Length: 495
Image (cartoon, rainbow, N blue to C red; front, side):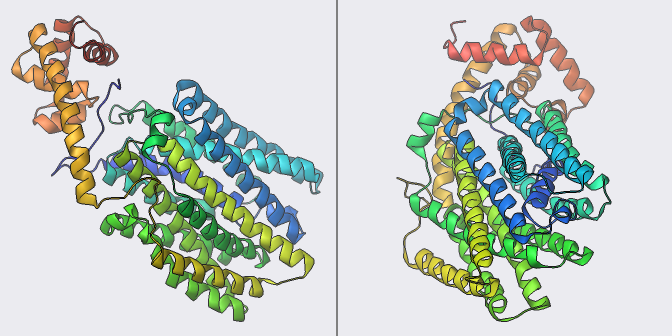
């Protein structure tokens, strides 16, 4: 049994903004690195003069990300273990090593590296960043819903200016920042792992998760189709002349996409649960694609950037949807998020591939591809509008109120069972009424700051009660307290 209860923001309780901001800064470094690898950048692209090489390397990167996510979804149980977490951290370090070796080798030789070397480097980079994404997704699942939503969109929003800074820095500081960002992100992740206010979410076995919730084929197909449209738009940015205003424009639309996702998550949460929020993209995509098909110059560039904003919106809403459904259905967070991300990465790779094949052979230019993408968007709009869309297979999604009621009933039974055992332990240890209140919060994994705010007492008083509780129970640490409660519950009070 898990040692901790899920963390919820209670009515009247403020968000833990220091925690949210710290997590957002750490997660933002993932997004800045991912945006740099995915889109136009000032240093890796600068060493490559051939257009098809840009697109091909990004296809390899996206396929590496896709394979990494699929592997983690397949081994979700192991990835949730201590060994699996260490493996993911090693993958993050591998990204930094590969980025440093590849970039510095290319610059020191003043030549493009062999294709086989670049393919291996970009593929491993995709796997490494997918590991960092899943680490942060699992950590954010331990946050209260409002804190999770805020941290997710704020991280993407902060990742936009970090991407800009990374591209405006001169060599070798830009490469150094790219290599260091995932490691700094990993360091912040480690600090939050140790934070008393971050209580790990309950582990859900993959076998049980697949029985409760898995993505429908239609939802996965829609994610791939959207990815193709976004891939065509992102790939076409390689044709835009490099300039500081271009990088600034990319950063602005990335931040705007994150802001739009926050608005939808904040005010239209039920639409996210039903995946109907993706319909908001249709008019924006049509507005972007029509001018791209017939106009050149700045209007076409602006439409390209608008597609980037739509992509960020889709990413943020998709991750939010996966975490919300994982909590409601008590499903594996790694499995749901990894599969949905793999579909998006596959679509992005296909979109880049179509653009590469069409432009390299001369069969089509990007104006004609924009028309094809517009047709795909119209088909998606018709399908989602007239066909029933349920994101999870085997589930008729209820409205938010009904889902919350179902979850509340189950949680009430579990909390009542757990509280009964804790009160019996407190009684046997001879705890006073106030010490029992503190003990119940400690057993939930709450920190000193939370307890003093909850009970309206000073931190010194909390520490005094904690010392007395440890003394009466014959224990010496929070870990021993949690072990004591866990053992009692598992043994049915016979310990």
